[in-house]
Amino acid sequence: MAWSRLLLSRDGRIPRKVYWLNFVLPYVVVSIVLSLADSALDLGELQPLSLIFWLLTLWPSICVAAKRCHDRDKSAWWMLINIVPVIGWLWWVIEFGCLRGTIGP
Image 1: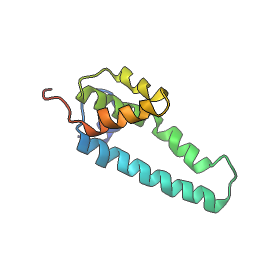
Image 2: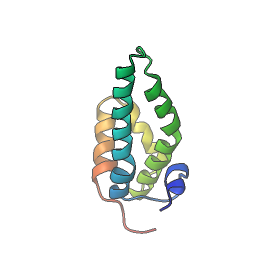
Image 3: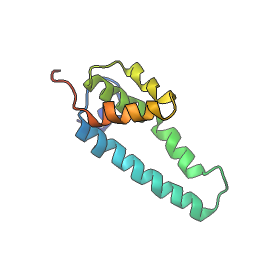
Image 4: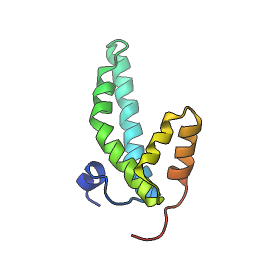
């Protein structure tokens, strides 16, 4: 799958491996590096590098999450489960991060 299609389109499905290795892992690594850079530069509480990264990755995060929902045969509206504190995040990790997608197109 092309990177532009993975990150900018909500259509289609992605398996767990693509979700974790091509999106979550790089996202976490870059987030940690930028957070450390913000701390080293002592730019205050705002952490501008992390904030800019978060803003730039907001749409790609939504697109990738929607594709993962589709792979589990669920509507992308299931992303809103993350609004529920603790339980919503735990549900997301188990349902969409750990369970295998459904068979089919």
